[in-house]
Length: 99
Image (cartoon, rainbow, N blue to C red; front, side, top):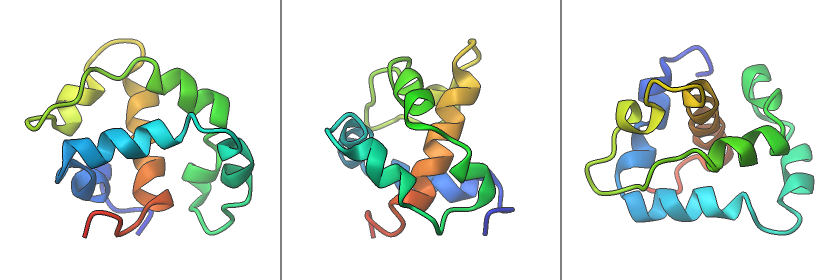
């Protein structure tokens, strides 16, 4: 599953932009850093994402709306890779949350 295209992995996150906004906001909560460290079943690429890296990426996210897509969130600026990596991490950390 970790070798699937990121577009496919994150597509469930875009079913409801309000839920995606909530999931992104959860990363700011107290103790989330420790919870991230205890997530051992993530693929290697997702395990390498630190809490500080993710919070810095979250600070660059555009406003989410019902027509948000991976490309509109990712953009083409200096923070695009960090936003893409954060969404990739979310696709494994919150599997099936939107189903």
